[in-house]
Length: 280
Image (cartoon, rainbow, N blue to C red; front, side, top):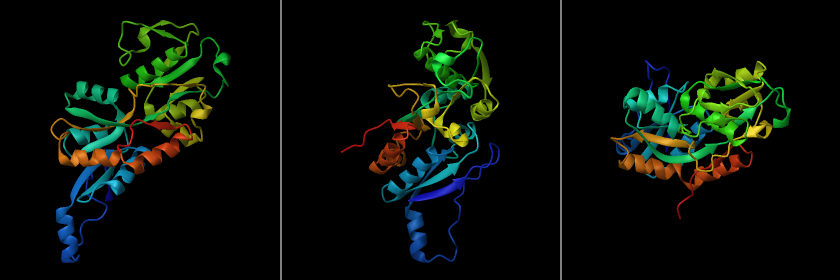
C-alpha cells in the first residue's frame, strides 16, 4: 500500500500522511490501520519518487509505504539521521558516506536500485572533437559528485587524475594533466541546468535535472560508464534499523518485478539502467 507525505523544510518536517484517519471511519478501517506498519521513505524528484510509489503498491500485505517528499539534497539525510523517516532513496553510496563523515552519521547503504546515466552537456559543442582550449567546465560543488564528474572526464581522456588519490575523493586540484586547459567552476547540483542555459561550455548533469530543459542523455557529448554501479541510486537506512523486518519488506518491494519493469522501460530512453536483478 502506498501513501504520500510531505517534508517542507529542514527545520519543520511535515511527516504526517496526506489525510489522517477519519474519526468517523468504521471499526474495520480502524482495525486495518492499527495492523498496518507504515514505512516512511524520504525521496526527491522523479524517477526516485516514482520508484518509491511503485514499491508502495508492490509491498507485501501488512505494510504500507509513505513517500515523504523533500525539496533539496540535505533534508532526506537529516530526516533519516533524526529518525523522522525509516529510509531514504535519493542518493548514491559515496554521497551517503560523505554525509556520515560530516555529520558523524550512522546511515547504511542497503540496496542499489538504478544507475542514472550522467554525463556532460554543451550548449556550444556538438562533440568532443569540437572542444576548444580554455573551455569552462561546470562540475558539482559537493565532493562526491565532483569526483564523479572528474572521473567521467578522465574516462574520455579529457583530463588525467592523480593515480594515488581515491577516485571517489578526487577534486579539481588532483588533475595532473589538463590538455584543454579547462577552467573548472563549482556549481550546486541543482543549479547545473541553469549553468547550461547560461552558456557554460561543458556542464555535468543528471538526466533528472537536465530533463527540465528537454534534454536527455542522447544529447550529452560525454557519458559515464560506471559499470560497477558505484554511483547507483541506493536505498539507505540506519545502522539501528537496517536488519528490521520493515526494511527487508521495503527492499523486497524496491527490487520487485514491478519496479524493475518501470526502470527497464526508462532504460530504453537511455536515462538509467537497473542495478539489481529480480529474484526468482
